Image 1 (spheres, rainbow, N blue to C red):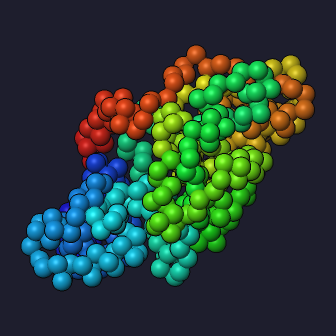
Image 2: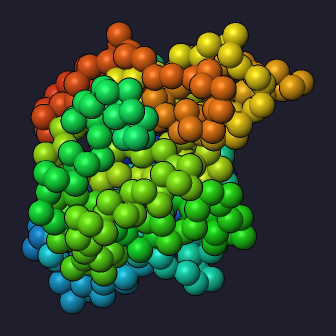
Image 3: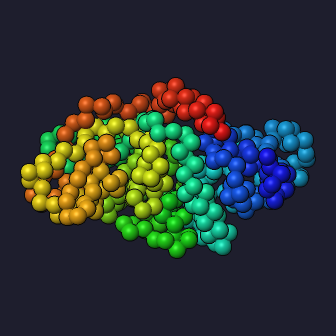
Length: 370
């Protein structure tokens, strides 16, 4: 199968590894091979093949598995770590999925060079093939949306587990990444976001913040600063997506837009939905609607559309963010409780157990298609 691709055998073997369902990988293709060639030299690929997936292990175990001396392997691990194509956590190493793992780790420190720009081009081309469709359209509630707090409070429906203020209050350590991964990747190929800047990085909560700051990928912020950042991001019309766990769990929030975010791209264009049913969804009173179209401009998931000077609403596409409420001057839009809503999991291990049956089925189906 790999004979038709022009690459070193180790690079081809690594590309084949990245197609694994365990890594949520794409099928083997010229685009994947070209990306792997760009990311790993033949010598680096040979070492990378001996790295564990996800969970990092110390140098001694990697040296033993590779059957090579540490003097040979350390420079290669250092080179890959410097490019951030592998995870290096306190001199423990692992291989990450191409997306979201490596993608996030590689770009979260706002790297910008000729090498980064080529990487962004190749990565976006690969993701745009829509390979994520191989994992099916079954909804798995891995991510949740945090709604616009002002909208919920104005309706006297304060649900603390769903609000940003609760998440900020629960953590002593808060940080912000140097860049938004998705906006940075598009910026590197000359396509800037219509809502925000690459410097509007992801928001980090809990002990993950220390790793982010020590790694040089972000900086600490106070609770007051985080509140101001949240207000700014909301005013820019961004959607807040985070792991579907309780506010007390260490977590990260991506402040997303429809023109850049790969998660929203997967939803809007590839019918892949990893977002949990929101606590609140929008209800539209069409008798009050004046068909101004302002809600459609605010919506990041095409739940509201405006064609031929006529408004339409699809509740199945609503994330419950509430961004469409304030622009609606006739007050034709309101938030109502979603009967499909379920509270978030306590933490990520609990979430993983809850999602296991669905993810196993998705993996098996993807393997059969493969």
